[in-house]
Length: 394
Image 1: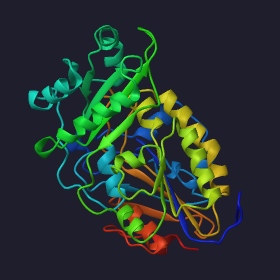
Image 2: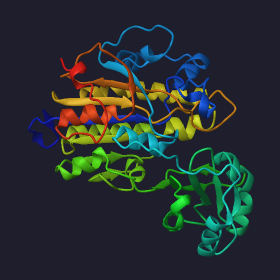
Image 3: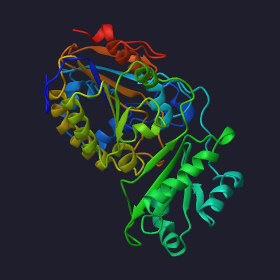
Image 4: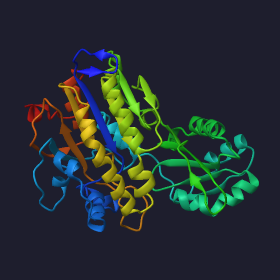
């Protein structure tokens, strides 16, 4: 195996692509969440038929109810979530072996004064909004008033999020991040909200655009994760995209925020070629933030096609002892009236030179089977989950 620095010692590595929001059908308990009709991938492809030859070869389309050809280059299965919730934080924590028993708090009527007034005092003025809303819609509605007054826009959604939006000309990203860090410091106890999210935007009224300077300030994991164990074992963990934010920096030895899913994939490929990381852990957020939450099946399908085109290069960068996994953290149905996440099965696709090419892994009980499988491969056990390694080894 060779990288830019010359010959490298062969070692076992894992690369994980999390397609944020790529659900593949309602979970067994979806009705309790109002999501019994959810099928993000299936409904996107019904609305916008899109050739996905490389993802199909990995087995993605075989997970849909309609019979599909068997996988040619990878093992395929799907998993349903044990944790309470359907958000980014619980999904990622569970795939790393930490099941969340109690859901994070949500605020369908907006935030109470005790967690709004400290923000207003710190920021020096009353907030705008303070209600559940689509991020693009509330910026369109309140952005002009924000620019005129400097008042921050505060909003939430169906998830446990405390989102603060501001125009970069009024509140530069570094200042907005400081405000969000402060909010993170007082959101504790019964108000331990999953994520505080900075939502910078630019542009003139009527043409506001959110920027890549988003940052997520996540509550610290409530227990040990597989990432913690990897770092304790001396492994190098490279987080791509918002991974470092989701785990509040824990269990990550290096990271890089990215501006798009295409950039995230290319950064991951370069990390594989360099050979430094034992785990490359990548979140591809555009599926969720740009298309799922905006009920845009055409954009979602286009993003799938973009990922599909990059899959061969990613697989070609694998060494002889590398494990590639593609999964998701929840669904984000684009064809219903809601803009929230959906409680769905997620893909569990695995490939690599050392693994069998046509294996049905069935339905996995828990996202944590991912960490259990990858952990057995790297020799660092996950805190929880059932490994599928014996099923996929050639």
